[in-house]
Length: 392
Image (cartoon, rainbow, N blue to C red; front, side, top):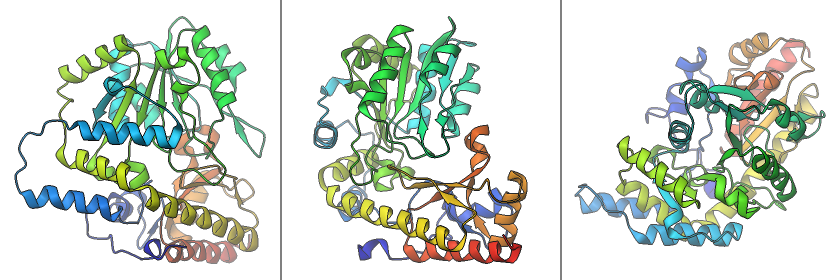
């Protein structure tokens, strides 16, 4: 267990959404934030050094894109996923959610249908609805133990107006790392109905032992031609505030259209800090990432054992990746609204209520595991005390 991840770093008063906006978001006093998906860990030292060098130079004029960033990204994708891409397939953007929104704007029309697979990362709803497209849900199949993609239901909801599906891979919040066979089956449905695919793979690096990430675009030639693969070092290395991401588009016609849309939206400017951080993270961050995921997986086991021993009416769902834990609460004698009140007022913890990910998540809470063990233990102790006081 790496000591670097045990360090408790003061984040209150640093303009942190997670720590400084918890009261505003949840309404309680002295809440322990275990919600939004950023880490309470410092980025790798090599990334900090690269950013220091940009600052110390002291001139922040308009930057030109560096080909060394392309090389770092290509090397990372090749090493991690055995996925070799051409340099011209890369488009750099300032965040995956804005990128998905731009893709929807560029490749669909108002009232076209876009499919998401629920329960899922809640901004997916907004990027469809706020662009005046029709949101179509294809809920994941859940047998009480494991989530699967429901491809039969998917085919049943596709109409002539359906143009696109947004895939979460690995899946937030349920922690599935989709297997190659599952992706190939989905790719065949998309080929059959000529759907464009937006594959959000921001959690691709955050895998538990024995898991392998397979980029959706890599499963077939047809998948490569219809897929926008959205990736970033931000989730992996805790760089969300730097706003760095990229999209891999192997189809030249799609790539040209998206590039033009970004240009017309004035959303194609390079960011000096983002480039420096991306290059350093991908060239030097692999050892840090390995230590991180060992720590996160140990945190997962710690929570699972703690819940089993002290709060048996709750259940930790098995996970294959991400640093987000999906906690089933259906055996508590509380409605979702009552459970939220209990967590805030009695336990004094701020978790993401499962209902924000879709109706299918109403019996769940999402917990962020990317924090020092002491923080995690404090949150669990608060929950246990509230659990015992209720006599559950």
